[in-house]
Length: 77
Image (cartoon, rainbow, N blue to C red):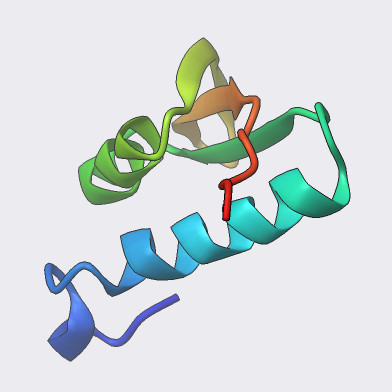
């Protein structure tokens, strides 16, 4: 979670990309899944930019949820 003052500055993408890079190197070939509310369009956009593909939508906690997955590729070098 980021404070509202940090929204839209690319911090979430940068932090998640770094975590996915580490994960890809540590757990070769393992997929990563995530879930966020459909209404949180910024989170969905970051997930898609990171390479997540929508698998399904479902209702939970009184809101529609976005469930996605990706297979991170380790960075060379």
